[in-house]
Length: 510
Image (cartoon, rainbow, N blue to C red; front, side, top):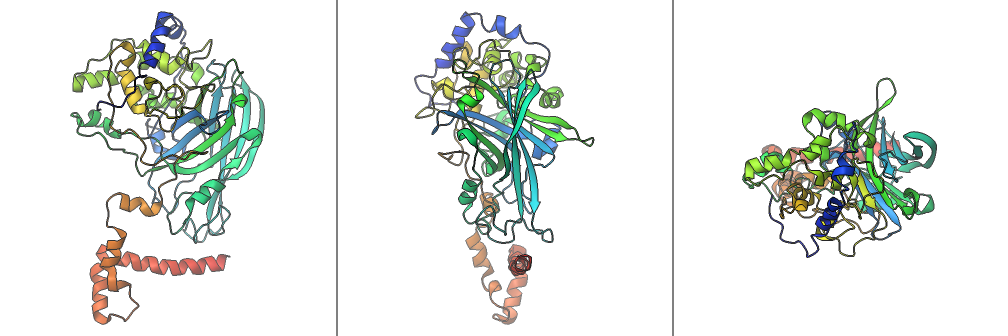
């Protein structure tokens, strides 16, 4: 939780907007009073007790932004399966087949979905007699050596008052980009990524597959806020971990109500099929961090099963948040006075004059004004630093939502100027310049080295003669093999044998 010294001269713009809303009476009177009983929504990595044990269904983050290279379109990115260890084979990280992964659009501010894009997945296995995810180097998505593959369908559903009025399939059997096993298995993963981008009608496009986790932050906040003395800051806890991403790029006029009302609310959900064959919602996500650090334990699972129209029962968690009081107890930074109506305006309604739709029903959605063009030079603090194309006007991959949210929670909009942050200001990998924008996943072959284990060259040097043909070193060679087994020689020999078996199995199968 460190001061941020990089803010520009425009950082008061959000304060100005909020003050204008307060002066107009649009917050306390129209905002809080109209909230009715119900539930709010959002989640993040392992944010609730039940979903933390169901990673395939756990939605980690949602992003929504006007596409930087195609400003007449909006891109939505939703991620699942937190903390994917790149070397986590042999099954790696498929999407669940008994789930519905949904992207929701509210285009009139009534806290009810008007459009829903539903993704469902199927798994296909070529050779069930091997434990291998791939039986040889993979050079394309239809490579016979890619043993386990997935495809997906997309269904577009139109709703009115939460009832289905129309639905149609807009994509069928689209290939998923696989988990990045490693350079030996997938020597050119970028080609596989490009092949997984699928064109839809009307200039839309879709992607599903593994990606680097784009969320950057120091998660040691849970060790009583960075160790209780700020000794635990500045480490991107998610560095080196992957997620499963669904990305959808659609024309703005496809998802907005009209040119006069260009603001949309976005969220995602996961439904899991139960034993009776019915689908039940188990995860929901709009803005980041709400269910993770705003809702108490007693509300978290209920929160994940809720919908925006019923976003009132957790109102007190927003107007009387726990986090500022915890910061005051540990660091003696005085918590702003309650109730926190400033947070209601930013996170439940959208900022008036920026991304608040007319006649809005307060609810937790990621609200985006699609008429605001992308910034030529995005600022990581978004609207708080004068960049109206960024968070909380939607959420771009580069937005530092931890620092921005922390500063707002600590009263930035109420006149308590602060530059607090976690000292993690950007992702460990650069994002792509074209759809789907997320960075390529870390490959499995880099997983162990990223955690400081022995370098590959050192291992080869240590093994030395152990890799020579049998008999080349006589008794001394056998001694070296036996003495080096604990350091990894035995593993290398087993891998060599496995590679020969691998090739035989591949030849028999194909």
